[in-house]
Length: 387
Ligand SMILES: [Zn+2]
Image (tube, helix red, strand yellow):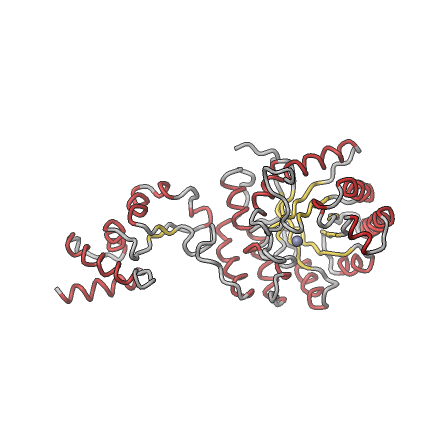
């Protein structure tokens, strides 16, 4: 599959957007552990938080920024010098400044577009003057529902003021691939307009999942030349959240050959950490990471998958350091039972015996449980003693 962008940068915002999930908050030591794992996986940018929110978040951002990670550590800031000061005191190398330029919001804030854009530009110049090697991103929040002219004007002025990245935020998960509101056309048009003005900031896409299309939209943006994609662990974030990190990385690596330097086998550890301390379970059918993501169940599936896993699997589980599994329940067939008996080292290969075990497995399965290999040993012992 052809990819427009040779190397896409990946931004994780579990610690900023992710904490906007109601009830989710990570202690500083957990935040540090999450940041370390993201760094090990090879994320390019880690958004560590919005320091103006609380003193403890400020402290966490400072701790993470001070760890000399390979990833750039970033902070979120309103378009205010005070927020910039606070972020720079934390020692961040990346700063995301947001300001919505939709007419309705400007009216609400009693600001004209020119006045708003002046404020944005001043804050960006201020940040760049204080720290010239700081990477500054400007986000016109809810960009895709704002007037395109306003976004272009704000983005151009922000780039003139020194913004390195313009982030196209689909703040409400509004875009739909294949319709007139699609991110492919949006990013293409934005890049063209900026190029006409001899501006070439990197384009980031921040896609919310309100319609379940965050990943599809992010890939649409990527195909149109977006250079940075935002994601979070378990897609955590406001409302339905954003692009899920693990699924995004699996697709970019496996299907787009977009990166060959990521350690995806660290993803399960990261997900279990975030799940545990967010208090949110990973759904069993969650792609790539969920317990059942590579588990074959139905008789015909397991029979075919045992011959060749690709019969019922388009993604190799080893990409994230996992293995295919066979589940034993009411859907199982003889081949799954025989395979599992082999797994536990059972020497009795008699067909009649395997059929009796299958019958028992189906009985248990009908009560809504699966038989794992430990329970299978108990079943084998029980039935062996009976015969
Ligand atoms: Zn967001």
